[in-house]
Length: 325
Image (cartoon, rainbow, N blue to C red):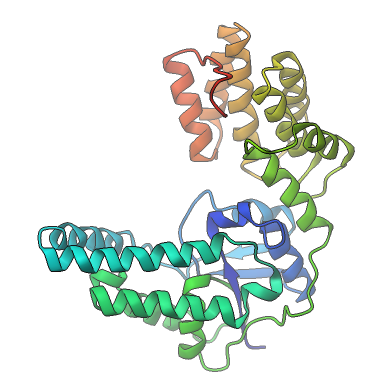
């Protein structure tokens, strides 16, 4: 079996209704994959680190070294180039290319389009521009060296491998026999739809129909990737944003009582952090402090939940309905 490169969007999965963490689970299931090699970035709060284990798909580590030092090199180069007119012009051109590429990734994507020639060409144009303006090395975060090491790590491996979307075209050139799954006719299913619903509810926009979102969340029973406890916690966030604190507390306490070890690992931290804020807003300071401490005592909590808990222990949370939550 050859290597099948599965594109990773990182945090952008949360913004894609038709190509989110649930969609990747469905793609891997369609391939018959019970494991996936992790050759993408080291983000501990990556949405697939919740979705894949919850779906029973094993993440195999050890293929993507931490290249934080390479990013530090690029930051130093940028500081140096800022001192000179020609350097600033190169940084502006590189920055423009990055913004154009970001627009491609933030536009609606589907399984068919994410591996389509339009997106792949946008990846190539982006990296060609960076290399032209900043040169290979620190300016490109040592891309060729990093990908060369990744290729060596993947030698002799087979099956599905998760790789950053912007590395995918070059890896196809460097990995003989590697390919991508045929997603031209793949249609997202229920797992993808539920994941998109929860992602939308966790990051409300000004134009969202809150009543419609609440109705959708409350009528769903959930699945392994997006369980009922998460749908309840997401619904509570809508009540919270609307200032309906008693209803928010009831939904969060229901979600908290349903927490078990087999649920997505971020859920406990997100649920308890929000519950701490609600209890603070209701004047239940002692309960809120206990809830914040529970977040920090978890074996794992996403950084945003830890930040909320640490801030809440320092000072009581106050709900400002004039500011979007």
